[in-house]
Amino acid sequence: MKIVALAGGVGGAKLADGLAQLSFGADLTVIVNTGDDFEHIGLKICPDLDTVFYTLAGVANPVTGWGRAEESWRALEIVETLGGPTWFRLGDLDLGLHLERSRRLRSGETLSQITSDFCCTLGIGAQILPMSDDVVPTRVYTNEGEMPFQEYFVHRQCHPVVSGFRFESVEDAQPAPGVLDALTKADLVIFCPSNPWVSLDPILAVPGIRDVLSSKGRIVAVSPIIGGKAVKGPAAKMYTELGIQPSALSVARHYADLLSGFIMDKIDAELHESIMDLGIETCLTNTLMTTQEDRYRLAEEVVEFGVM
Ligand code: GDP
Ligand code: CA
Image 1 (cartoon, rainbow, N blue to C red):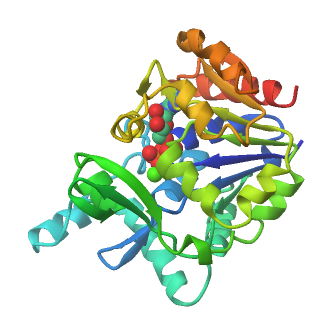
Image 2: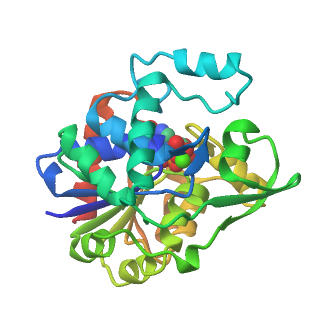
């Protein structure tokens, strides 16, 4: 069975990790948001891609969900001593990857080629694909003006009030090699519990992706909103600021035209009928992934429900 997962960073990587542990893990393709990517201290940083990569490689920091385990911060201490920017945390081990990737990008290789080589080197069985090799930076409209995504997300810690998003140059972007092919051949497409606005919408905005998805029968999404709240990050805050009540129902509506099924948390059982009214089958289960076992169990349930 061929499975494609669409993912952002922390929430997406956890479910992708569970999917990769299933017996058909080798037939898993994870298409990852690159709208968060940016240039920082002379290096190309791909936060979501790296979170998925580190998680599937088993070297992710278990506490933060992003960055690497057993990280040290000596290089950044020097940057600080010299008066450079330190608001974006880059550990020593992490920096090693950014140095090598930036070097290869400068020599003309594509992000998808480099990612594929890194996956081979670390023995990752699943295929990890950036949504595009083109640069499609997410811009956030806020009450303090329009700003680059990482300025909003990390530097300003999501304090500005959002009024919308823009995926710069997305109309000229192409899906990375392998993306449309994987989607076309997939028996099941899974929208991971990622931020709908800034993790999955950028992927869906890349020309061609939505068209392929529109012709697929089996697409399921896992709600990143549980009990009206995000497990982590600004998804719920964004819904509220955009004038929409944050809920599993709002997430289901967000993707309603594409979904055949929706996986939501048991604590949201009262929304179940409203989601069924959208013409979407629903599955109620525990969707919070705290342990490694949670990831595996949820992945198994999502696939079982998705192919039904
Ligand atoms: P980011 O790019 O690092 O922000 O990560 P994602 O966009 O992939 O994931 C962020 C979303 O994941 C947030 O909206 C969280 O609510 C959601 N999330 C994180 N952990 C879990 C979990 O264990 N279960 C579910 N259902 N959602 C989660
Ligand atoms: Ca992200």
